[in-house]
Image (spheres, helix red, strand yellow):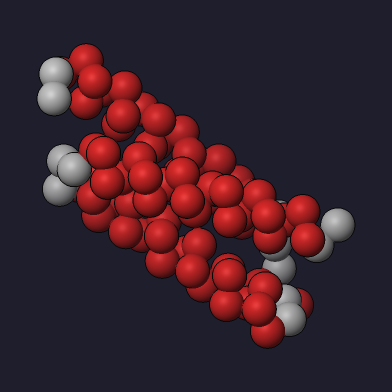
Length: 81
């Protein structure tokens, strides 16, 4: 993978992680019902794994995990409205 591609993937992953964290701050996890609580935990786990992948310089994996976390976080926030 080229340096440019790696930098783009790193930026995409970081943007998605920031977006996910922003969405999760809107959620009071203590008020979530069963499946919503499980989804919240999954999102947190995906986010932590994405951060670990970035640290390990696996930008493709980080981008994929961050994207999954972001999409699940969007769905969770949408379900609470």
